[in-house]
Image 1: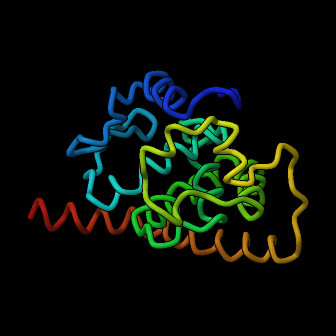
Image 2: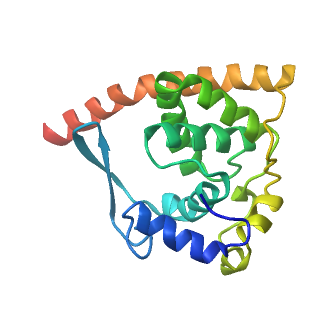
Length: 187
């Protein structure tokens, strides 16, 4: 989708445009609008989310995972496997999307997870303009994104099983948490 020679700045601008995210990717918005099938809903665009999303977006550019539900399941599996570190919003959002990815595209989520176990990501640091000056190829090299699919080790498979269990428990608890929140809000 993005060539190795393209500047990350240009690739990200095209990524924003192709996905109708606006000129700033929606970073300045108070709410994030999502759709679950035909049902629209919103999430507050918290400071923690605003800190993680610019890195998440560059991960989309580097990995080529789409922004549809399958792609979000893949990028979430990849980010969890490559470690979201101290980005709490990334962990929480990724666990939910990973749980959904396990249902709608389990093989793709598994392959993305294994790829993530053999990659690095940008969550070890913070977003900076220097990342936008890189070429997409330099970004991919920094993230150790191999062109061939890595072979899963026993450790990879155990990590996937554990992460899938945690994501499934988190994903299953979300509807109940939303119901309680709405019940309190509407009472």
